[in-house]
Image 1 (cartoon, one colour):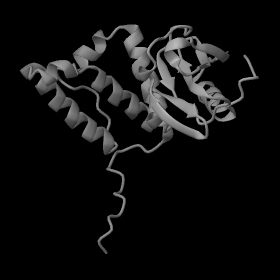
Image 2 (cartoon, rainbow, N blue to C red):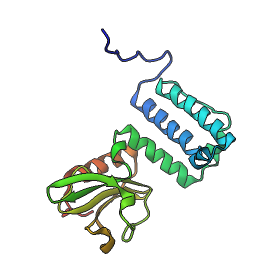
Image 3 (cartoon, rainbow, N blue to C red):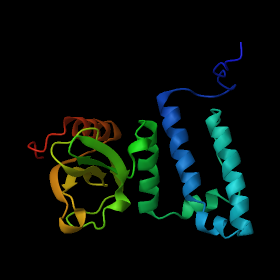
Image 4 (cartoon, helix red, strand yellow):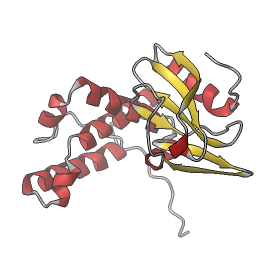
Length: 199
């Protein structure tokens, strides 16, 4: 039989949901510690750091816990609180399986709907400060739709086309106090596509 079978968990690995979340969070911390611009410029120290992170990520993917990566964790500890919060949010979004929608908006044009990078919207006018953007699964009307997450809460927003001539408008918002609550709000806002319900 040529088809590969899923590998058994490594000895000592932990397959609980919390363990997966912890490993995802750890992976994002390590990736955030690498300056990819310096890697692209062939900075030897940063290239070495990237190699160490790559090895650590491989271990994490095999279910191992990584307590310390020499030359990398020192940088992680220096990350400012905002960067640490963003890294944690990235990890939670990744663990929830929403990575493909991260940093994107749902663009609806007639009967067609597609995901496109938030960067293609030429401005942020009308948007409060946010840490992450996620494209919803559904939307009502035409234009560009997204969910935004900050330390304060989740809000959904839309901007009509052409985006260069319109401002973002907030359609709903809701605070959250825990990660499970954050998940529920994201799912609610993402799947309802109902702009008439305003928080």
